[in-house]
Length: 168
Picture 1 (cartoon, rainbow, N blue to C red):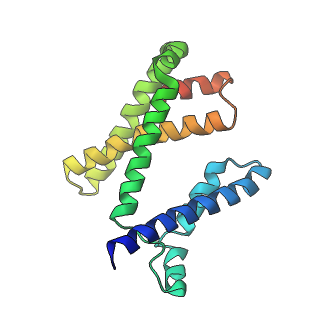
Picture 2: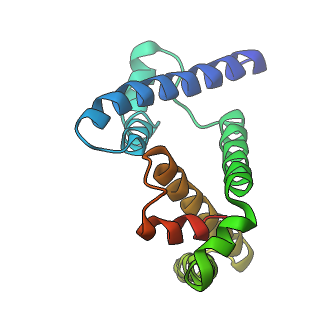
């Protein structure tokens, strides 16, 4: 398949996923669910390991496929998510959270790293790869939680202040 066609199908795939996640998210918000539930459901449902492969067979094209361009876009989006979260919250949020916020930030990074690293090494993955995967888990999950808190308008609650402080 020519490179231009693969890029076009990758952009079409991402656009389709974003559009469907937004539409389903609008429906789920009416029932009290956060929009991220729709994003996860659409992503899992239309993956090439679920209904995406069936749709590929019906459409006679590799619309829902994992390729180098999709991997590049996912890595770029994680970097932008962390960057935006860091710009939005910064050190002032850490100071506002006090000692509990600082402890949540430190242990919110160390504990997920240690758990993921231990699981991956016990599964037989090499140490370097396990460390890289483990390093990527904690900051992204905290940034997603901080994004959900901001989007749902829960930032003013005292219980969420620690979580926002722990986000990178």
